[in-house]
Amino acid sequence: MPRRNQPKYPEPRPLSGGLGDQRVESAPDGEWLVRTVPGAQATKSYRCPGCDQEIRPGVTHVVAWSAEAHGTVEDRRHWHPTCWSARGRRGPTRRR
Image (cartoon, rainbow, N blue to C red; front, side, top):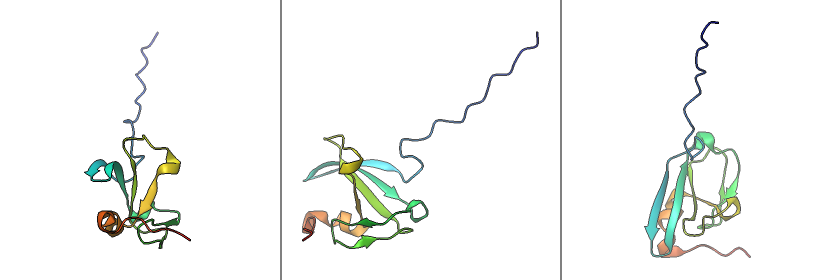
């Protein structure tokens, strides 16, 4: 009986799901898992908690969630990169 070749499986995908790089950021407000979403991968609209403005599809942005709480999808927040970096000075806005 002829020998069969072993099937070649693709390399495992990174945990980031093909989006931007995931990193851990430590700040006075805790440790955060942070992922950059490239504009080409941004397909939905989100509301930035830093400025309460819309992040439109196609715009590069940051997704962050608490590293300590092992947050679920509902705990993730989408931020403009400048709003994310300024959150310690401003804090999130409150929607009315």
